[in-house]
Length: 326
Image (cartoon, rainbow, N blue to C red; front, top):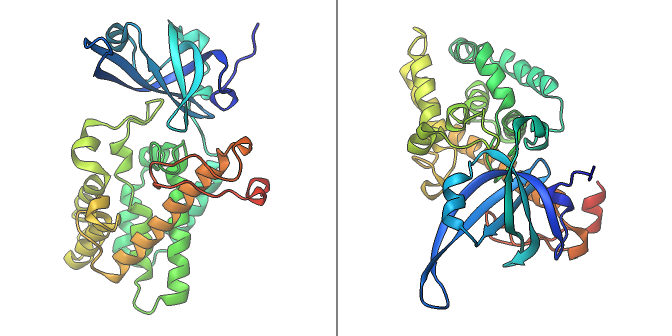
């Protein structure tokens, strides 16, 4: 039996037969050289080792109708390159039965022990002294929410895009905010800031379909986004706590709605309190370093010291040899 191969083992110029999850598909309409309308099926495929773009030229419309996204199929084709990125040109697709699939091969999971991470986050919650905020956290993090929180990604592609990613990212945001409190915390409200850090991405539990191989975005996520979903959840739960002041609730809602920093980055408002600004900076630091870490970990040393162009950062990244040996 032929050994199974993964995305990170694909070689440019080589023919391959590989089972991959179909994450996204898009029918691209264009005009052929003979002047006739034509179409190609653009795909995003992958497994636990990474993703790869793919294109299918023949019978694109039929495949677009028949190929189910978020399922695993057997793809045959040739590994090429398009605009500096690997691209698989598909010539055959074969359906796979559920018995032929190992789901663990297609869902990336944090390398860290999620139960250990959760205990760390729970200890931070226990350290919150302000009674209303502590009660709010207790209300929100019931058993189902805890389970989903430890399973959820922090994103689909940009950073911490794997099971347990949200938990990792949240702890990083808490750690950066704690450093701010220690270094420049004269006007920061520790309990409020750390509560905001813990809850800032809580809306992602509804933004993403946590049963999906590729964490597809839900209708609610597409229409509202996790900032709005999270702020609504906080407002609803805070209203159930008689001692929760309107002023405290207002600032906490603002922190969640503004934590992306800029309107063009998805914030409803820019941060307008010092706690909101601290949350934004802590979130941004975790996210940006996560992006760089992703690029470094996926870097192919055969391509020299510079990564491929990253569309999210809009740059290539220099990867010194020592970074790969840390």
